[in-house]
Image (tube, rainbow over all chains, first blue to last red; front, side):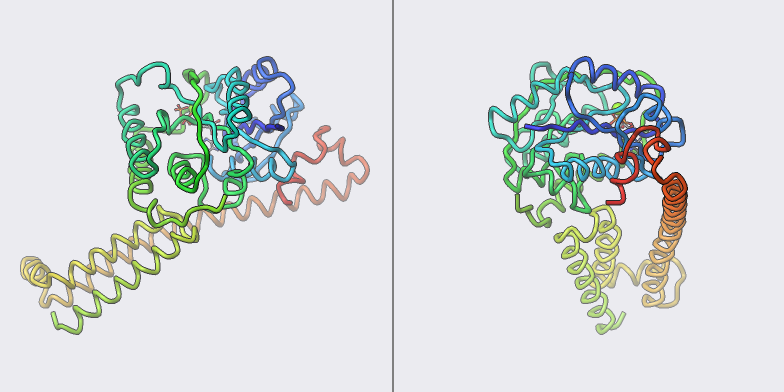
Length: 231
Length: 134
Ligand SMILES: Nc1nc2c(ncn2[C@@H]2O[C@H](COP(=O)(O)OP(=O)(O)OP(=O)(O)O)[C@@H](O)[C@H]2O)c(=O)[nH]1
Ligand SMILES: [Mg+2]
């Protein structure tokens, strides 16, 4: 199975080189591409200097648009699977291999990284939101997804088309719920996510609250309205 | 409020809601954009169903007739939408400009560097920009 690692990067010049280095070291031979999401800093220059494969967006599309660019590239290059690896160094590339392995072994369409398969969920505002989304996803899909907001996800061929071409697809729990409802075979792999190493978080408190409201609304209400995907 | 107006309010907003939901269903509209129209039609339906509410609110606010208050509320909503759309158009305009400029500059590089295209791209071959336009 040919897998592409998609690294969305928005103003990540500080952490990108170490992320790529670690990826090369811990997942040697893995294909990867960086999607520079119209960064205002030296993200593109860092990629050129290091010779990293780069999709350079001329303007900021947001994580969804940036990730989708990577997905389209993966499809057009004939990859069988693609996954998200954040440029900020929070995702440990050591978990790529077990995720790919699980997808191949169990013939899955979606493999989700989860922080809470082996350890229990810590108590914080953000984790309360995570639990709420988990509940919403279980209610609408009948499936337990222990860590629906974790960005480390591996998408198989059958769901890549939706991810790449649907104008409403995004690497978020609402799309996840839609894919599961549409019949995507889903599995989970325990991962650990690190603290941010540099740069600025994209999720301020206000944005987090908005994000929660939107996900709740989408998963609970509009999920029923959306047409299922034909996988 | 006259019965005709109530019926118009209810029918109009139900049609709006139906149309919006159909677009969401077919992935023609993002869910976050549908929320405005859905809440808008909900409020119109409520006003059509409970005209007493509108009448007492109008009396409280010193508005002469309930119908006037309905117009006021609708105008208020439309102004908010107009403002949000204005912001969005500005952002889109900036994005289109940036994109067009980038494409133009890249096209010039390509024409003028000819065979040295690869070198000019920093050895990135075509992964850099070529694929995005595909
Ligand atoms: N903020 C932001 N991030 C983007 C965008 N496009 C791509 N990204 C990338 O998306 C990835 C995830 O963004 P983060 O800000 O780390 O979001 P997060 O991991 O959910 O939040 P934190 O735990 O606070 O870091 C990073 O690799 C970003 O560089 C964008 O438009 N805005
Ligand atoms: Mg992060």
